[in-house]
Image (cartoon, rainbow, N blue to C red; front, side, top):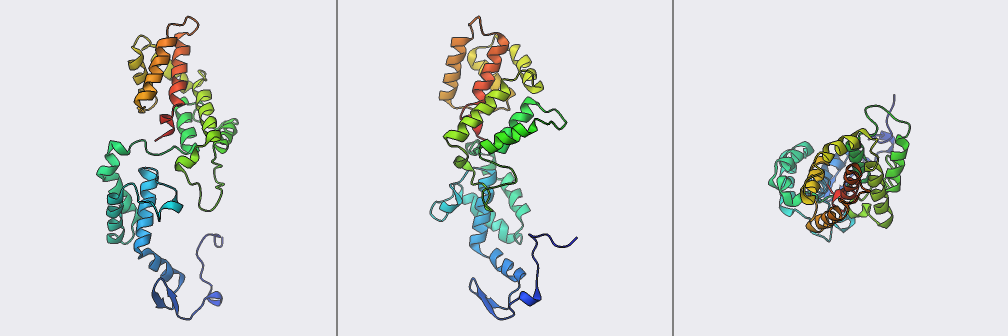
Length: 267
């Protein structure tokens, strides 16, 4: 089938057979030799370790600022670098150390990442179960929602990909996120939403604080700040007794409010 465009290829007629100097080393290097020299660098180990922490643990500042800003978890990065060299650059072993580390289990590192549009949209669609198990023609609307939030799947702005973190959120994309969550959790015809509403209606008599806790538990045990919870409790106390607001509407509205909070944008 031939060679894929992104695969490395050695062409003898294009190769420079003379001595070369690269990162302080001299020799008649091949492409593989250059890769090995790069892998041996301390800077490479630092860069990969920080990327792993950025992706799996907590958002870092943009990559362009890394030379000037200290990492969030320097001790963990040092630990990952050690594994990188001890295991002959084995990324799998670096991930094993990360996932078994105390830092990964530390609750202070929970909810330190802004969900990407795809993470937000897919998590919402799983909860609402709107598409069931089969393909749907209207799935394109979900794809377009991600585009409007700033992530065109398989079409990043540059080869670097998307920057992520707080850069996912600006005044425009934040409105798109809020509207999407509100629309999906407001659709009580969706199997997942109907199931959540039916379950929560049975807890309608709970105190506002307990009821909000029940909502967060059914949404995936999310955590919200004290001020956010005070606002939700205030809304619950004010509107629960309204005759125009049925128990179903009350539950649906609370789900919409919780999923449009700042905290729901984090993972």
